[in-house]
Length: 128
Image (cartoon, rainbow, N blue to C red):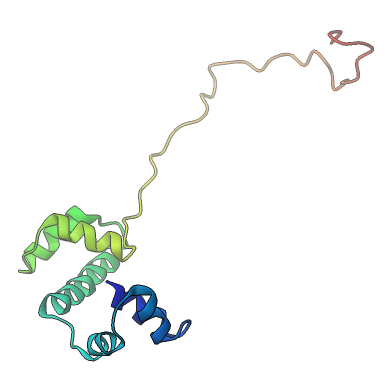
């Protein structure tokens, strides 16, 4: 975990100082940097790219449940919770449709009378 942060911040801070702060060896960091991604990490990246493709094809309306079902259809078996976690980590979220709501009820009520007749100046409080 510390190596990942060091990798992300290597342009802002010297590696030697970060290694000292995190109490890790510099050689350990460089071994991490040269190491190939694990099989699980590669599968995770592939799964994220598939999730993004499905999400974009469906106009960003699919959430984790529908994306999971589509992945299952395509033969990519993983858990629904993993799909939800990967979507959250990568900022992939479904657009929520807003329900239409009628805000007025035309014809049922009459407008109130204009008692002030646009005269808003009062001689004293509570006179209008």
